[in-house]
Image (cartoon, rainbow, N blue to C red):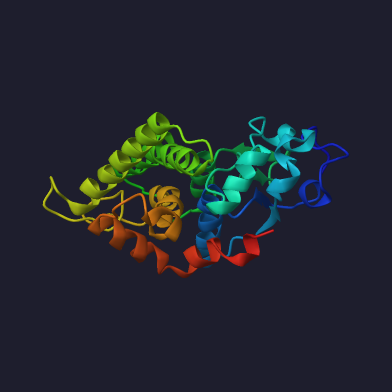
Length: 261
């Protein structure tokens, strides 16, 4: 499909794609959208194609990528070495989603926006969203909370804690903020002020698995890895939450080896 979004340098797998095409890397940020696509496939048979970026090649700074997502951040060489060490928790701005079912290919940047787009467009039965506007508002509140304060602070703490040049103020600041954010999730999941523990972030009662959980889980799951254990005490209800979502087959596929370079 001819489009000003593509040029001669655009990979053939991108410009010749039909339907949904995902450009990703198997990092927590990439896994957010990978998981939803796998969930949609399980329920509706949704199909898509995938291109996996090699972060070593600085693809996110090339013109073909910037046409699709002007926010083409990527790690410097030093940051990339750090990224390998912590399983690429600090990454550039992937994924990018392109929907080729429109008259002109429609790119969506930012993983949270991609979740909202896919749920609104491809989840007809609201399996991963909500028909009730109040419950849907809850989902958006937690989605915005996580993307605004959760993943950025976890990533910044990981960066400053593991670089060779130690800056105690930065390490302390971002660790304190990350601990606070984790505490917010624990308060909510524990039902501390409602007397009703929750299984998921949004929805009435114990909640329902939704895009709000898909936005947070790929990041908080890292708190159970060896990389993170030294820095945090994992609260009880958040630990159960991580394990509960990890049991979903689509989640395991969404973080699987097929998304690795």
